[in-house]
Length: 166
Length: 106
Image (cartoon, rainbow over all chains, first blue to last red):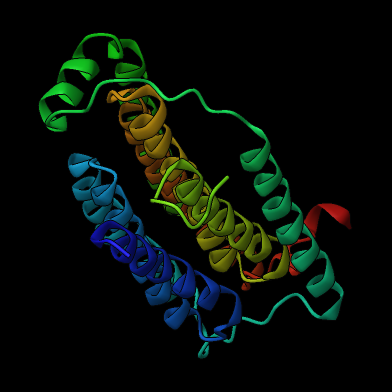
């Protein structure tokens, strides 16, 4: 048991156990905060993989932004304390079955594929990510920024359409 | 695949697979639209974890991390649009239970 193993097991537990809470917790606010823990676990795994910039972005964007957005969604649409019920008995078996299907399928693929490991090590990531974004990935970068702009303007428009015409 | 050896690619892929499976289970099981969105976020996160793991163990450069940043961007856009749709659904149907959103069926 070296340090990396201990860290990995801890972070995997921090990622997966709160994610399970998403299935079992009935109060949606608790589920949201459980998801926050899971996002932080993902950030830790990124850091363990040497992706420091991505870990920071994960904390900023997911834990800071998307979770707040989800909580706003909860607050703006709640009448009484919301109990998240699963979709009745009819959905439990299909839900678990589809989860198992995804998991077992992925395990099968992971077990039966030879990934070719390459040589060389990754140095500091932030500057090389910036260089890649402005070099090889400049077109996807611009497309993503336009897509983000359009999505946010569209979201604002959809969310408050009733003021003008309807 | 040697799970007991040093931490390698398959460990990360297994964690990612488990997260994706939990996300899919949430998407299928839950009736609350916001809860379903949380499941979608979990699946997106597991995809990004896969990209970073491949970037670290297979490609050994930052390509996977750059693509994971695009996943983050698209996830943010998706969350914003989906929540706007959920708010509209709430305005029209006074409920965000997905099994009650059947206006088109009638």
